[in-house]
Each structure stands twice: as structure tokens, then as C-alpha cells.
Length: 331
Image 1 (cartoon, rainbow, N blue to C red):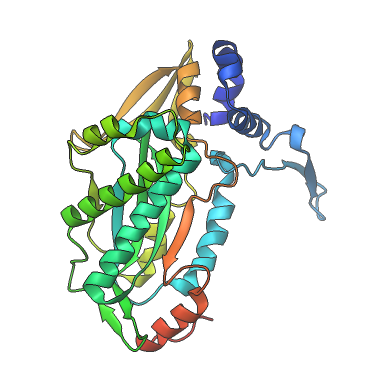
Image 2: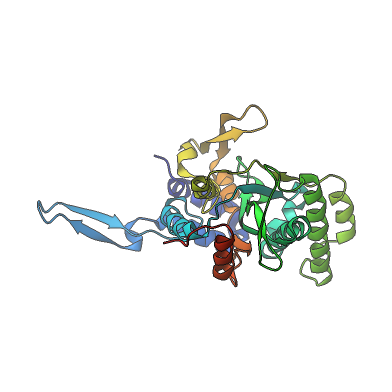
């Protein structure tokens, strides 16, 4: 099977020769880690059968969060920790997407701009929770930065519990049927909160190279996309649903088809034309460039918890929710 590491080994020298000093340290670190992953360079151990004496050498993983080979165990551990946090209610999937006009600014200021994305989206949901339910929501937000062709596409996947705890913690207020919030209204508030924080960042010289006012006019020309999808009804399916979006990288190894004659071929899904699977071919160094667009700044947290699931009050709030919903405490 073709792997990302194979492509880096084959076309990495061409990529380094083409971009030279323009390659960011985080990109070099990710490339080096993925190439060394599960090779003798990272060491390993020998497993020996105590019956027949057969030996198998297992090499260590790089544990880099951008490596497609290393995400299974962290995802399973993370999902295991979430089992006790799922409430017996519907869960809604809400997606907040940034306009592509912002792509160059985000790529050059990832830490600032992505933090604004998290803040604007979370404040939008929490505000709607207060206005609609008169209480506090609970949700998990996961950052994705890619589309099917590996281009920059910055968006947040939010899994939102379908209800809220009242302000006085006396009752659980469920949503009505399959309806959570109006997507158009969410979009307007999200855009306003994002633009306000971006303006403050420009004024604080965190985005000093950009003139905010001409950009503001362009960003208000078109509506921003917020998608509220159908709820997940079965409590047992919530974690399976969540697993589709956490601990993912820009492209998984199973989507790779081949690499030869200077090109990398991979599968992609064309959602605009019947959700068909197609094959795309990119030059080797262009494939690496697109893959590395999606490396995150060191220490940047891409899965965050808000409201009832916020780290400061999670255990107490969830215990109160379970009491109100007559759900036994998790084992």
C-alpha cells in the first residue's frame, strides 16, 4: 500500500530544492517525523514467541499528529475518555466555514486567525443557547483545514448536545424535534463576531500587514456558510459519528493510488457532482506542498470543549445533567 512516507522519501528532495529557505521549521519537522515513523531510525523492540522462538521486529511510531499512520491509538484513547460524557439526547452537527477570501491571511497567521475562528464559533453557539433555551449548551469543536483536493478550507465541526441546562441548574431544556438553530441567523452572528475580533487583531498589530477596511467590504459581499445538519438520534452512534472527524489528517493513506513518473495520484470525492469518487494527479512536490499547508502551530489545540463540557466545570455539570435526565453515572 502506498503511504505518505513513501511520497516524502521519493519527492522530498525535489520539494526541498524547489522551496529551500521558504520551508517552515514546522514543515521540516513534520516531514522528518513521517519519514522516520516505524523505521529503525526511531528504534524498536523484538517480540519472541516463547513456544517456537519466532521473532518479529516492531519499530516505534513518530507520534506526530500530522502523521496518518499514528492517529489510531490516540483517537481510541480520546474516544474512550469521552464515553462517560455522552448524554441521552440528540446531538446536532454544526459546521462553521471561513470564506476562501481569508485563506492567504489564515495561512500566514494560523495561530491568531484559527484562535479567532474557535472563539467566534463557540461564542455564537453559546449565545444562541442562552437566547433559545435560557441555559448553557455543551459541545465539542474540531478543526479541519482541508478539502478533498488538499486545498486550504478552514472550518469547524461542532457536535452539539440537543438541549441545555437552565441558568439555575434546576432543569434540562430539550430542543424541539429535529430543529436546533436557524443556519442563516447563526451565519450572521458568526460573521459579526469573527470580523469584530479580526478588527481588534489588526488594531493590536497582530495582523499588521493587512488593511482591514477594504477586506471587510469584500467579506460582507457574500453570506458566510454555517451548516446545521440532521441530528444523531442514537446515543450509541454519537461516538462513532465523532470518530469520523477527530484525529484526522489532510489525507489518509488509503486514498493514495500511486506515485510514479513525478506524479502522485489519489482519490477524492466530488461532492458538487453526485458525490462521485475521482482520481486526481499532482506533481510530487505540489502534493507535498498541499499536504504541509495543513500542519498546525506547535501546541495549538485542534479539539476543544465548550459550555457544559468546558474543562473547568465538566464533571460537575455533567453529573447535574445526568441527574436531570435520569441517567446513571458511568462505570
